[in-house]
Image 1 (tube, rainbow, N blue to C red):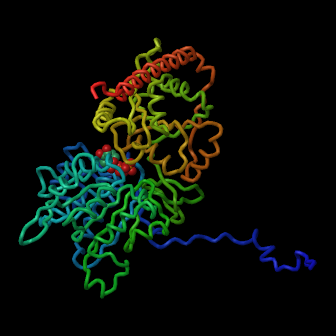
Image 2: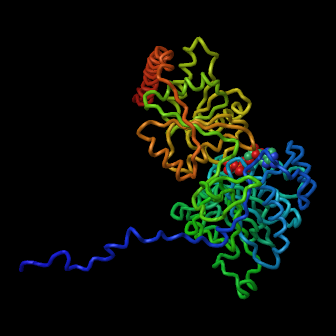
Image 3: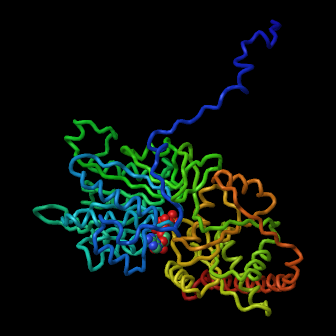
Length: 528
Ligand SMILES: Nc1ncnc2c1ncn2[C@@H]1O[C@H](COP(=O)(O)OP(=O)(O)OP(=O)(O)O)[C@@H](O)[C@H]1O
């Protein structure tokens, strides 16, 4: 049968209203909409180390010995708040806390000090604080901070659980002891670990218990908000004394008067309520440096700013002392542009992020060769860090870099997050990162603790749009352009050709040696 119906016979839904519909304004929950504002100005500090009365004098002494004179803003806000709420631990559930403050702003101490102070008041040995970090390097870093403040002063035991040094059994011996009468007894108060190692202990270590946990710290917390990749969080939740809903009525309170307090830290903490939901936060309190100011873009705050609080979901702040630049150049000019920038701007203590370990090695070798052939300049000390470099060598390079014995460190993203290396003066992003978070963490390796620093991103024309998108999503507007004239690179052209030739020969010799070794290994044994 012929269908004579015209399109107009169909009911068309809303043919006229789409354009004129008002954009729905997102209404944030109260705790996200009204945070406590943390200043990002690390050069105008007004609280001296003796200025937080709640803090134990022994901790103050340790801070002094480290050479600290003032607290950073995030510490000024959080340390007294956290210490003060602990007095209610026995009466009510304590509010969970989310802290979103720039890279290098001193977030670690803002939880280390209150945790030590709280736990040392009751010296029954029990696992009461669990600190989870996304990588082993970060766990080691935080473990060292706890150890420094506890050593020779407090009767507290902190242990680092990580997979490379000890087996699970050996680690178990460090954290648990079996007593015929009392069963499993904890030998530690604080554990610093990574998600994988923690899950292993929850699964396989008999007696491992989180039932007495008072603090659960998720540092670099945004790396844990992807539900699918972080099923270990369900394991942790199930292992706590109370893992039910976060509605605190009298019935629940009677049965579970105390609930583990969650502390979430990051420079790029998601403020998306949906993503935070599965972390089961109880009446969370947000401390943040990100606000919306009158008539301006989203930006960071100083102590004197008058904030207009509101929708700042997914935006981030960076340190005030950080200057950001971009260099637009075609892919084939990148190596020489990098070399030229390092030489012409006399860049020292540079960390350069590239996208793969293969690229790490290639670029490091190329810079070394260029430096060898360059008779006009002093030698450039270049080294590389990637998963191909052993942990021992890795630590050695970091030490040498901190001591100023390495000028340029080429590395993969493994060093991009949380790592605190002394005095990196310049970060180079050899490729445009895909996501704003990656950008923020990489550039955040410099300009830490109030020091100056610069970040330079290499942008090929094909990625220019992507880079601007990343900047826009991160809420950034002030990235200056460095223009490198191609004529400046001509002076290195012959050197570059020679360097590539020499590297090719190096590679051929290397592969011949490897082939010889493989052939020798596979040769049938004549005695057989
Ligand atoms: N009050 C202070 N005075 C001087 N230096 C400090 C102070 N507090 C912390 N620092 C130093 O600042 C540096 C950065 O601190 P930290 O690693 O805690 O930053 P962060 O906010 O956790 O950074 P990220 O987000 O990159 O992990 C460290 O070297 C630390 O020792």
